[in-house]
Length: 530
View 1 (cartoon, helix red, strand yellow):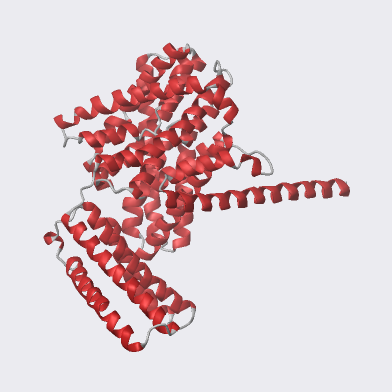
View 2 (cartoon, helix red, strand yellow):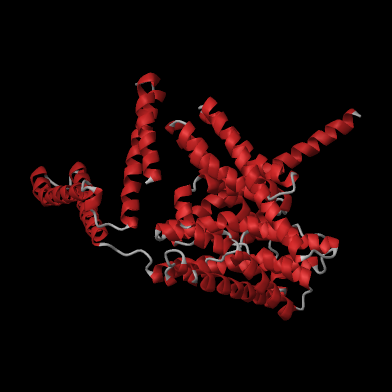
């Protein structure tokens, strides 16, 4: 008995050590991908998938995606992180195109994709509809990653983010309804509409209830660590409560996240706690996405992919046709009741139809009773791979070619002055090193340094005048304001870091520093809100 226990303990220890080794490898690979993607200006998530394909043989054993893990843990974290960072006022101003794309748009795209798959691959209706719904889901992480590298108008970014919040929920509800038809044999149109209504409205009510209850808890506890635990419980609990009650867990998470971000945190929590909370969820979302896209690369078998390539190309064509007939006709009607969506924006929404982890998770979750289940999984996996690589790499090029953000006169003046300042300071630094090394005598050093000092002074004065203009006097575009806000944010974070270091080194007391950090956090949040 003792020997058996020792053997079991050694086996468990070996598994833990192997798991830690795999985790270390994945973290190192993710770090290398982050550095290389920035250097070569390729989307981070695309780099992760390609890296996953390359490192499969380096791991002690093969690991893969687990659909239950994605749906019950990763998906609620990603949805909640997006929801708490979404301003309801911005969402409200673009709600009409968002509802069109996430509601009728998903249904149209799913139906057209299913029809083309049935005609092109000879699939039965149920497998075709399930695959069409799976491929109608857009992974917006890849699109938002491009927007961070190439600035786009805020309204376009809001439409993309808003569609992603509700797109997943509608697609999952349709997926469940099709599975219900498969299991029961038939569902009438009226029953389908009724089920759809109940699931979405029920999920909304669950999210509202949990979000409302959480606001009271935030008022009673302003400790940042307790608030983090509470938000994690809300994110995971909303999904589980929705699924337990037979309504949409995805809708429940989104609604709860919107309430927490716009009512609970913004009104009841101090600035310092809010900064901590938002930072935690930024890290959580980034970490989850990192592991998901690495695992996608690890999961894809290139030999199987090559065998199914013709069918995969047909599936990509099918879902792109569905997206085309969803985006352009629906958004053409927006001008009848809202501000029109520029045609160039529609190109981004069309090509930004990138697939991701949720599509693969749903493919994994297909019941064994679905005809040709393994072939459907291979079809979805291949489509996700080509989508992440092909569309992921071409989207930044498209956004740049469309020139969505104008290069304003203000921005041009600012960058010219920054170039003058940087080159003059670089020359001064080189002169300082030559003087210190004894290469130049002091008199020659001062003579050569003087013209550069004049350039530095003039550039600094001009930049100061530009940055100190009143907002109403600036003719800058939104990208210029974003750039200035980024500079101000870096300065505030530098101030906060200096104060934290002073407390850690016992130079300043915590009582003195706490108030100043609170003021800095409020300024940081004001920049976020603006």
